[in-house]
Image 1 (cartoon, rainbow, N blue to C red):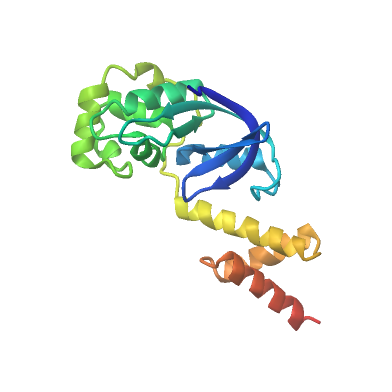
Image 2 (tube, rainbow, N blue to C red):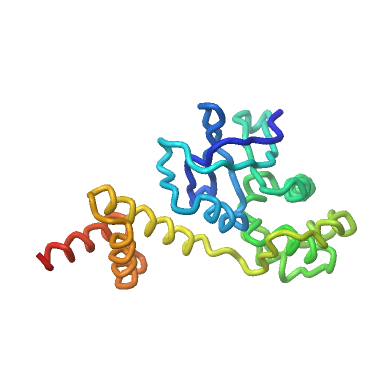
Amino acid sequence: MITHLHGSLARMDVTGPLVEVDVAGVRYEVLVPLFLWGELQGLAGEAELDGETAGPSVGLHIHYSATTNQPVPVLVGFLRRAERDFFRKFITVEGIGPAKAVKAMNVSVSTIARAIEQEDRPALTKLPGIGARGADKIIAHLRGKVVAEAAMADSAITQPVDASRLEQRRVVADAIETIVALGYPRSEARRWVEEAHDADPTGTVESLTLAVLRGRDSRQ
């Protein structure tokens, strides 16, 4: 069983949400909860994660899952061991499997654990895919079992992470890399793409790139 991966961050896809980790030339696809996305983006920095070249070093505590009904192994990664330990408790709740748990965890572990211990049903109901009935099951099954996690010093994200905003940040980053690949300086490419994004906040990589190139043509 895989319990930890240490390698190079090769790719990030917020729509998963997942990352690819390159370990000695072998790529592992790992699901990661959205509350970790900001930290992973900070780790990636300005690196171009195109899936072809190795990026910055990353270590992930892994929950490995494979069942008769789901024979393809599913890897779920966390930056801290305690987060993985909480996840393993979380998926013991009836109706919450690994994939559903990953989607639900868009706030930090300490935030979810406090809601459980305080029987904060409305807070749990707001977790994606949980609902009122799911919140009741979580409290009934886990209250009293996640006291340590409730006091945990983690990323302390209390507000839901907005996947659409993260996706737009990825679009902007990809558009910048596209402009840089065409031979323009990175500092100018960043400014041009951000200006294009301000004018069209829902733009795609292609539309932002085209807007920048049209802007360059009009100035020549």
